[in-house]
Amino acid sequence: MVCGEENLDHDVYSACGSDMMSDVLAYVKDQAVLLTGLVNSQVIRTAEMMDMVCIVFVRSKKPTEDMIELARESGIVLMTTEKRMYEACGLLYKSGLVGNGVKHE
Amino acid sequence: MSESVRFRFNVDGSNFTTAGQASVQVKKNLRELGIPAEAIRRVSIAMYEGEINMVIHAHGGEAEVIVFEDRIEIILSDHGPGIPNIELAMKEGYSTAPDNIRSLGFGAGMGLPNMKRYTDDMKIDTELGKGTTITMTVKF
Image (tube, rainbow over all chains, first blue to last red; front, top):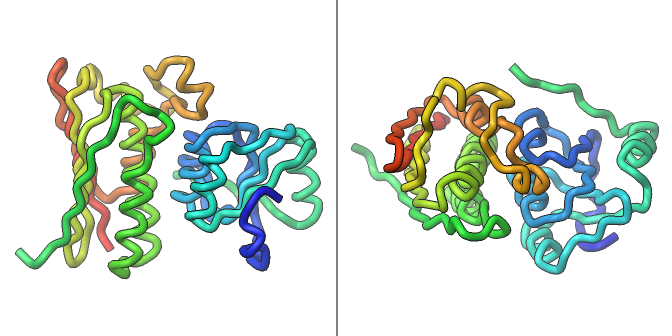
């Protein structure tokens, strides 16, 4: 847990994993959790634009202070894991967090 | 014309880190105005993509958001190089963004198509060497 402890009671049902924010903005629909290995302020802003509530940084990536501040302002939960993207996604998927399909006309 | 609310922002083109600040602010403002959530989401995403484009390609510019009774208009103007081939630029996956932008998570060639997808109407006025103005409308 990096920040957003106070928002941990929020239920989430779907997630997506990507290092490409362009793709998150283009293909994601109603996913609440973003898994990414990318570390910059745009990750937080992308999540905020998509109404996501939680970002998990994979491969032990650590968000910067600026990013943590942005996430706090938006009430977004930040977490980090040493697991790689594939494994982190797999674990969450196995626990019932689905991908929710790609809705893209 | 019915009463409208207007927000204006300067988009700083020199700093990729701060790109998107105007969109974050607009999202907050629209929430305070009680605009339907789905419309806010569409406006935010379209404007955010536009803002990122302005920073990547055009050294920033100006953003204006006008809230009408039944729709929101987003006007993004820059004094950048212009878009040489709009048809090509509208193609998904086509991008002229430099590699360093791709390493920051953008430049997948989804910006303009995405802006069109999330809005009800999008108009591009562009002149080579002069700049580009994009006007988008989201109805609610």
